[in-house]
Image: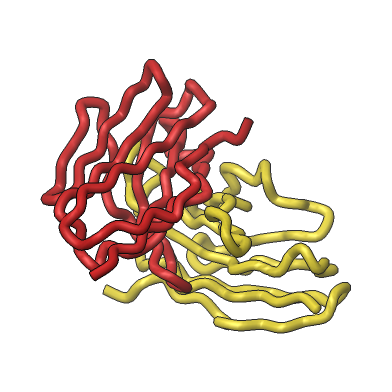
Length: 115
Length: 110
């Protein structure tokens, strides 16, 4: 079974530029998550989708971050404009259901450096 | 107070040692609990879920104390391959509001 795919793996941009990340979850997984992991910290949930609907985006900085999952499958996360403090690894994860104890499967992440 | 706190680490232990990690959470509404493992520069992977009665998986034992809002992970007979960062995770009963702790790094030394 193919895992969660993410691209690009690495991205270097200058502050105030825009960037987009793509995620393709495990086939059949209804729930998709985007996390931000700053070096030395645990992942922080940015947004959670159930199919193509948002169930939690309380920690998404909506003035600069946006995410969509139009057909309930793959998803994109965009930052516009980027700030230095956005330098982090952006992890996408998926699970079969948003149930009580469903395991999240993570992709390899996109490492973003903002100069 | 942070929502999920963990032992700051790092823990450096010899092979064969027993090591315990502690985690506390502030949201009393949390209903599901997990330990994830993250190798250096890799993605997190589920180690084990933590159930109310406590559970064991080989050398790993997880305990939950709801009254004290405390979760623990015990690793017996440590192996070199156990070297990683261990992340405590809590969520609500709808499978939402996932909060990861900062992680505790373990180095098992030969």
